[in-house]
Amino acid sequence: MNELRFPEGFVWGVATSAFQIEGAAEADGRAPSIWDTCAARPGFIADGSDGRVACDHYHRYPEDVALMKELGVGAYRFSVAWPRVLPEGRGRVNAAGLDFYDRLVDALLAAGITPWSTLYHWDLPQCLEDIGGWTSRDVASAFVEYADAVTRRLGDRVKHWITHNEPWCASVLGYAQGEHAPGRKSWPDALAAAHHLLLSHGWGVPVIRSNARGADVGITLNLTHVDAASPSRWDQELANVVDGEINRWYLDPLFGRGYPEDIVSHHQREGHLPGGLEAFVQPQDLQAIRAPTDFLGVNFYTRALVRSERVPERENAPRTIPEPPDDQRTDMGWEVRPDALRALLVRLHEDYAPARIFITENGAAYATGPDADGRVQDDRRLAYVAGHLRACRAAIDAGVPLHGYFLWSLLDNFEWAFGYEKRFGIVWVDFETQQRIMKASGRWYARVVRANALPEEQAA
Image 1 (cartoon, helix red, strand yellow):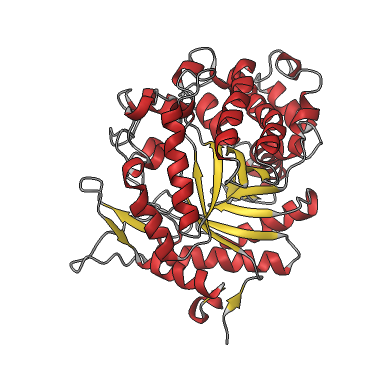
Image 2 (image 1 turned 60 degrees about the horizontal axis):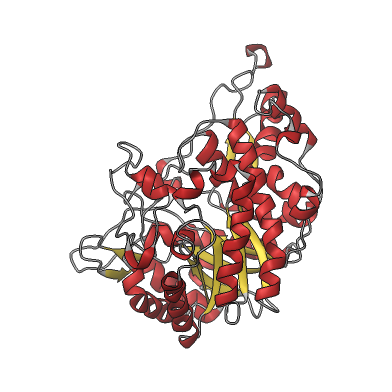
């Protein structure tokens, strides 16, 4: 018996998001989102595709719930599409849009699968972007209306709620770097957006609790372990800045510390805060953001290894970041570094002490497709997940209150700016025919779930 067992009651799940799988972009009163708008811009999506059909989950959800039941997972993390529920962003509630999530939740419960719902996974109604998007305080209050409408309808059955998915991506990739919708390139906009995302979370938590009595409420952050490429003080300083921008800028206010002063100073030096924090932070905002939550969701894919261009030659530090071999990278170009997840989880436990932590996303993109016999032998994905589950177990052994793991993703799907070029699913999807094929990694994950343990061959 050399299995690597997990604690009794550990939650095993899979995760998706609305825009990436639902399709049905114009069905039953859904309005355009910022991703519909950006997908229509030439060159914004790598393969020129869009999310109008995606995995057609809107119509095929019974088949996908059956796949989850075959996997044996106990939980499914999905997101609700804001443009389906409030097509004008706020005000009028579209009952037909909520009907879909009613059907989905009932199907999950009938299959013995616990629904975990994320309210915002990046598909802001375009009409709200037209009034400023997340740079506008009005959009934060609109989120509260949206959260109220969804939790009033589903809160009697859904008892696990996540307010936001990855506010760093929504703000920095969307408003500073222009890689995600809405495609802006303004750091002042990004920092205002980040604040309003966090503020809407804080405002939304008590509303969710009121409508979903007894529910657990949290937020999901994309977090990473940051390593400096050398002992140079320049690299060390940059590593601290990167950690501050990605991790602490979101963790600190959520855990009652306010925005980290060193990163506030960094943004001021860079010209990112021309009006200071006071330009968008109002009295009582930080108190609202620190609203007590029941868990922290962590999305993790790779570490950040950083190298400053400012290192003087005289420091004799290496001038390049050592590159891992191709077999230690995913199709996203991301390094496979499971121990960085263990280090991150231990740091979160020691520095912030969340009551409970859930891995709400972890997975890898590999393009492996069906062989001549129609089987998808995606061994590299299997190895990636096994390595990260070993890291999870090591973190638990170190005292981290890790209570569950959601594999990303159930299905190959629309991978944002990459379109359909990157496949994260444990189920292969033929986007022309919508055929689903369980991959080897999916069959293996079902074994893990049934045993609540890593099999002996991956336990070492």
